[in-house]
Image (tube, rainbow, N blue to C red; front, side, top):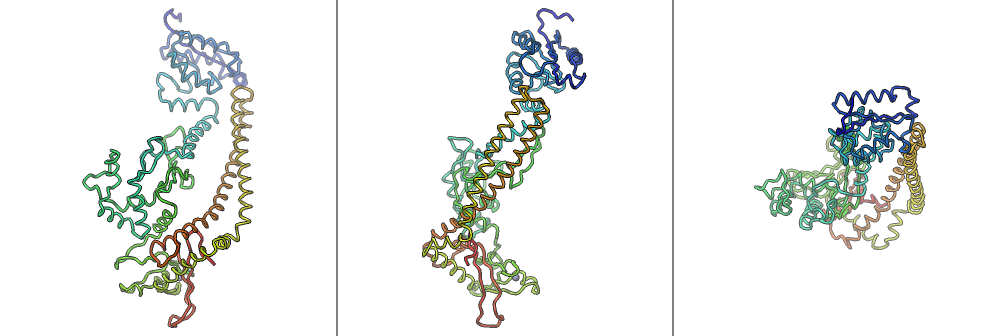
Length: 539
Ligand SMILES: [Zn+2]
């Protein structure tokens, strides 16, 4: 048992707090000492010296035993420090951190916490350290830590820091900030070209063929030649072989309008490596995360074209209205009937439901030619109305809303502001209670109670703030929509003819009512409603 002069000590430290005393004898000083000596012996850690503090709470003042431990460590007299568990050490995390991460390693002291299964000689992963610290105090602590880490990642995502590493085609890394992307002018031009081809009615496969014909390098080959970035799917034998699916990916990538969607996956627990996909609506969407390549209108047009994917039939080119015409009564998409003809003037649209099951609807037949005329007239009328009296047009569209809406918006904003303010207060209160616990003013029990209350309030406030934000966004959208539509009108002084581009820019869909008379009649009226993008019909 006699330690020799040159061998360093294995310090065994025990502590009993007042709280421990109330809990009974399982943690008694004698018990701790036995456990520590036993461990040292089994692991051949020589020259053990037991030091302890009895009946002292975990604050740093007035712990003679621990002061001695620190002094010996400082003086280089100790090789190892063993405690039964981490709570013996300190109850303040930053001080514990300091010791374990900086002081002990710097002085070359091995640290062992038996029940935490921690040994600085074998645990080197910082992750493990973190998980261990999380176990440090109480049940609530691991949750807090895990939350904090997630909060850091989410904070990054909210701030628009890019988490994905390779910039999408059309972008390059910002040399000034590796977390940002900026347009790569050469490829950005190609991206715009692809979007424009789609807006003009070409499908991904057709666009792919066109690019191949025009010898446009595919993204992997382009990235290799320009940035020296090699991708496993790069095939140098076919540098121009675009695929429809890669075109489709480009057309659907919100990065091109500056919208960054991140946190697509999430680690539910600091303890596990399981990664789950975050539902679409919970992903962080950062608008204006970087410079857009595609403007919003072109993007919207392309998304609409993509949702009514039109398939060319055996006769080749599709009619431009195909997929946009609906039956006013059953809501089905009208079927384009070419009647075996190449003559466009003979094309007719028939209710799709009627076409399949005659008894379930009526024909709602309309000639493609008449439909085009009606749509062109509607567009011309709206352009002229806006040009004649813009204010009246806006007033007409927003009449039912404007005054009332503005008042509501202001009130909602105020409420949101208040909820956010209180949320910040609660955050501070939570931090303050934690401090108080750490400095021993509050007991665990008091802390749990108080903290639980604040956490509950925080949760409620967050939900409320979220609801306000959603409502505000929705109402703001309604106002924005009119502006978006006016922007389209402003691009066209006049509309002499209906082209696929004009159609997609202005029109969302068209509904066709049934004719007012028998089909044999030469003269009849048939109501056609044109639903414009953003604003719907104009009554
Ligand atoms: Zn129908």
